[in-house]
Image 1 (cartoon, one colour):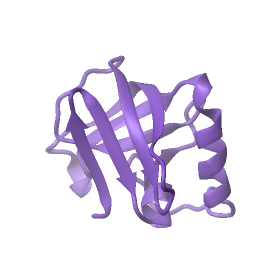
Image 2 (cartoon, one colour):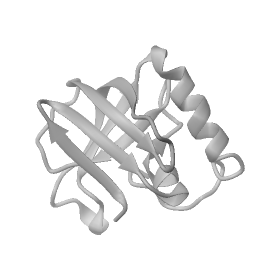
Image 3 (cartoon, one colour):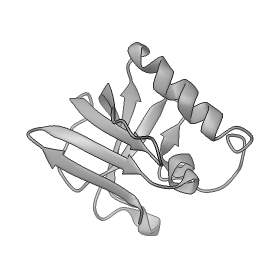
Image 4 (tube, helix red, strand yellow):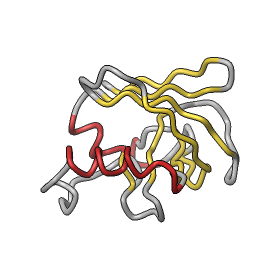
Length: 116
């Protein structure tokens, strides 16, 4: 898998290396959009998280805050990747626009994602 989540001092770091992994991680159906972050660390719905996101070849990490709205447990059916889905804050519109531009034309695909 080319998505690499890491936790450092309570901060999640998410590196998305391919357009396919970005497609699988992006949650456009959520208000303000969201991201799925593979992790085995326990979270509860409503937990606030801070994430440093690196998109493919972008040189800079993008800081985002979000709220846990989705949990895929370790023993999920169908071989689903364990992790959390976060709802991005209204202040993360620049990241959402960047993701939508990268995924232009692919957002309406019926391919499987980490959440649906």
